[in-house]
Length: 165
Image 1 (cartoon, rainbow, N blue to C red):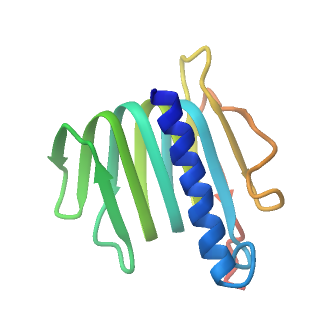
Image 2 (image 1 turned 135 degrees about the vertical axis):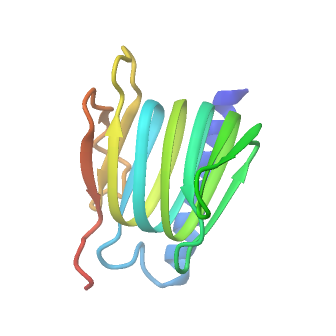
């Protein structure tokens, strides 16, 4: 049941990306890239402009709310912890989240599925997990190819082009 929901979320995410891109008359904005995490265990942080959809079985997501032009929604949290005026940590089981515009999210969880499109940076780490899950980051296949295991040590990745053109 949980896996079916994860696949459904990924499918909805793909549809959102395609609809938004199609409405702009192209597959994605020039310079946009993507990051997809499947069945991840560990820590994923994203600081980007674009859109992200995610879910996980158990863990937490910390979000920076109030960034210029950004919106964040979290669903299914059992607990909420205010870290600062603009930073909140949501904790729970079967938690889902989405953000658009400019956003910063940090996910520490098991069995996470994340789909992001836009421009920015990410950091991935899955220390001490035998089956850490997989990820893809690219602009060419829009993350349909090139999946590899999440790294043991933190690895910084660039999503899309960092130029303004």
